[in-house]
Image (cartoon, rainbow, N blue to C red; front, top):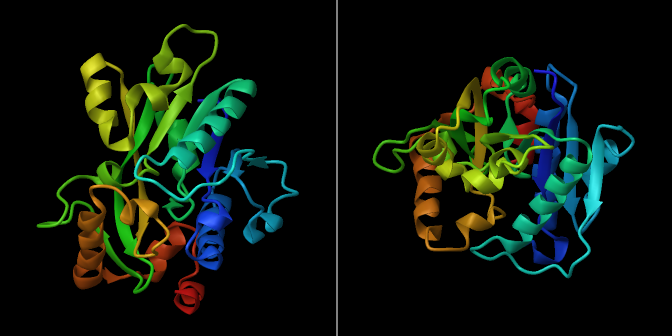
Length: 264
């Protein structure tokens, strides 16, 4: 697959964040997992109201683009309107650049170092995109990790909970909305498998894992909406039953465990 690969990162506004310093710290780790990719042929688009400090380390890298949001920032809502608008900015930029593979990445999650390479190896012209099927939930406070599914708490898979789990093929010059905007056509990350199956749209399954960060207080899906209490239960379950993050696992996502222990 010769298509370009783009990570799209929508970032909460500083005035809406409960702890901007923590937002920046988590973003730095997300960027670290991206920079550790074994296939370095990718683009990163950050859609944000503000210039976060970690961005200064990559702003001269031509692969990294900052798109400034030009509307008044608002507090997070259950509908995630701000994040949706920022994703729209990213999608427009990808279309302007000719399309390609697009993965939305939350600014606190991590991707495997093999993510881009696996996407290129597994996604063919016959696929509308791909799903990262497997992953772990990592508690920021304790650095304890639990793999999906989690018995008695969450029996779904990684894509059912983590938004950083889907990759769409944006193909221009076609009338099919599934190709022009696969993220809109297939819906939220937890809907992709069922919707794709229902319309006969093939999805590739990538043989890599992702990390869904919990327990930061900055993931507004933990604080907003009808499932807020249940998401907090997931965090508590990870703290109670998860195993300490080990060096090899951390390195698989481009992270240094000793540095993480100092920051957490």
